[in-house]
Image 1 (cartoon, rainbow, N blue to C red):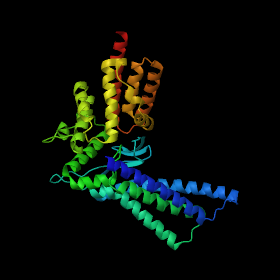
Image 2 (image 1 turned 90 degrees about the vertical axis):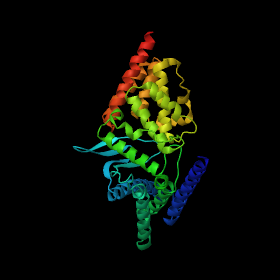
Image 3 (image 1 turned 60 degrees about the horizontal axis):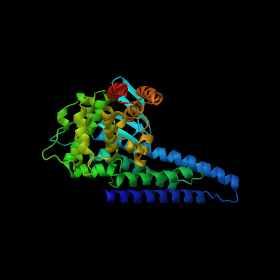
Image 4 (image 1 turned 120 degrees about the vertical axis):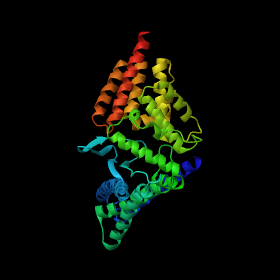
Length: 375
């Protein structure tokens, strides 16, 4: 993990240098000088707009690469997200929903082909985004070489090249951050380890069912069964236990869910960062419905967790935990405000089954904590 953290910082530093160099080169190329204040300000504004267009273009291109190469590999479209906005395919057509996952700028989810001899194509799907970014970068270099560009279009082409290179570095070099694993990491380790490939296949199948409104408690338990010599140092085994935890929560088997929390939150567990953070919040919820105001809420004050709560403030499971916290603190006004936020979120959240699960868990928290308050 230390190696990944150093690599992450290094890629971040190189990305900043590339952005700075791209901006400086473009401004100099457009001959903006300090003595000409008004033209300089106009040029700076034009550059900023061009940068934003280029930045979001490369995000769309990246996710579009997953879509194109996924379709070529036999995958089926599920959803396409840029920022918080998600286009989802439903039985009755397409719908626009909102979803945010910390550590990601977008996401193209697709249902994988069925397994053949325990295998399925995954490399092109994972690397499709990087390949498409590379194609656009090469196309922009060609445009720069052939056509004389000035002003906004010059800035746009230059920053399309820079943002494309940055996205290739950040997604193509295998890296596992504190929150998520990137495309290069997924492609490399799925190729090296069949069990990790099967684990990711299972995750995509779960997303497929969730898009159809299926709840965790109604899914096939055999998918999440522990393998022989189950070891939570292995990513695939940790993920399967995490899904067993979600299934236990959905079945309201809180003792079993608590056991899974104990195992997965150990230091040697290979559970990825964002899942570990969501699991830690589930642990707080489980403590709250047992201990009420005596539950330990210190984790909510830690810097990293505050960042998760801020960036994923509309996530149903986070709203459920904050609702239970407000009830335990007897802050009825805050609890009412969170419930209104949850009801509003129900209308735009892409996974209806998950919403039903969280709604039931909020009702359980209210019932248990109200009883404690009266007692």
